[in-house]
Image (cartoon, rainbow, N blue to C red):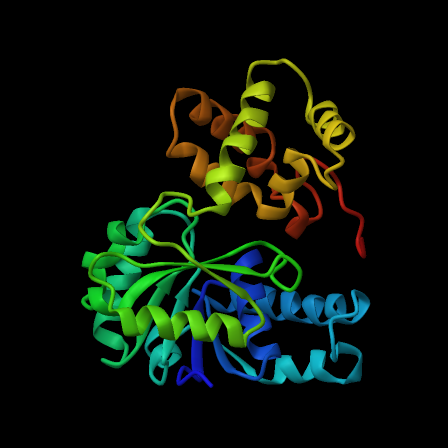
Length: 288
C-alpha cells in the first residue's frame, strides 16, 4: 500500500474534478482546492454529476453506495495553506498558463510540508519548465491523466533529471492504487505519449476550420465514418473544454493562434465553453 494517503488536487475543472473524485472513490482522503467559493460550488456539482455517471456507467461498486461515499471523502477549500497542510501528494491541475503555474508553485513551496510530493497534470509544459519554482525539484514530477479517468485510465508518470527515483516509484504505486494504469516515461517529452499523438490530430482539425475547408460537423463526421472512432476532433475539444483548447493553441504557431482567436470570438466570449456549459461546437441538452 502506498504511503501517500492525504491527497490534494489543485483545480476543480473538468479533469481536476475527475482526478479528485476517482482518488476519493478508491478510498483516499482528498482536498479539492480552487480559487473561490463560486469555483468550489461548481466543483460540488461536478462531483455529484460524477457520482451519477459512475452509477449509470456501471463502475464497480458505484450502485452499492460507493459513489456517494466518495463524495464524503472530499473536502473543498479555497485556502491554499489549509488545502496542503497535511498533503502527502499535491496534484496540480490548474490552467495551462506558465505564469499562473509559477505563482502557484512558489506559494506551494512555502506552504506545503517538506515531505509533500508535487505532481503536475500539465498537458503541454515539461516538468522541467516548472521544477525551479517548486523549491523541491527532487520531489516534483508530472502525473498526467486522460479525460474520463474511470474509463481512459492511463496515468503517465514523467520525471526530470532531478526527480528522486523513490519519489517516481511512489507516484507510480499511487497511480495504480487509484485504479490507473501507470505509464512510466523514460525521459521528458512534451505531450507525453498520449498528447504527442492527440495534439497534432486536434491541431489539424483546427487548421481545417481556420482555413475554411469545412465546418466542425463535416470534419467530425469524416473522422468517425472513416476510422470507426467514437468521436471526432471537435467533439473532443468540447469535452476537454474550449478554455483549455484556447490556452494551448495560443502557445502554438500562427495558424494555431488564429484558431485560438476564432474559438475565443465565436465561442468563449459567448459563454460556450464545451460540455461543461452545455454548449461549445455542439449543444448538449441537460442530462446528456
